[in-house]
Length: 95
Image (cartoon, rainbow, N blue to C red):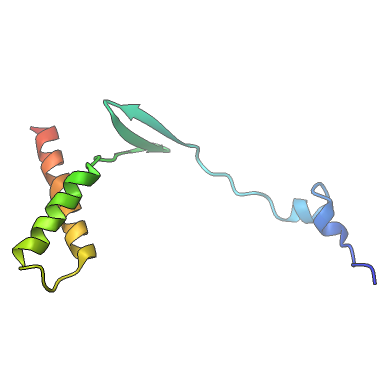
């Protein structure tokens, strides 16, 4: 038994395409600025503070070590370490 073929799915210039116009987005680009990645979206510029993955791992491990290698959550330790390193990097960048 042959498959049914619908014209609205195969004709991108037909009435179905005209009924649903595509949404337009502002172009997003990434530019390298002093070794850091800056995300540009419209008029808003956000600068991502890069954090060394090994430094985050060492700091997260030190939190676990300080708790006596018991309890806690590895994810919480990792997020806490990232947050602290980003705050330190932001403080040194503005100073």
